[in-house]
Image (cartoon, rainbow, N blue to C red; front, side, top):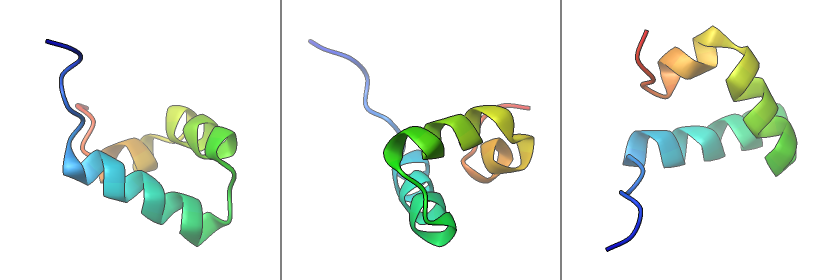
Length: 46
């Protein structure tokens, strides 16, 4: 059937972070991977 869908919170949150911080796609992913505050904002488990 395919991969499960990503949450709306994750999708819109990542777009918000990208726009707010002026990052590229790759930089956004790296920031989310390295920053626990951004992970919490996006709803990742703690």
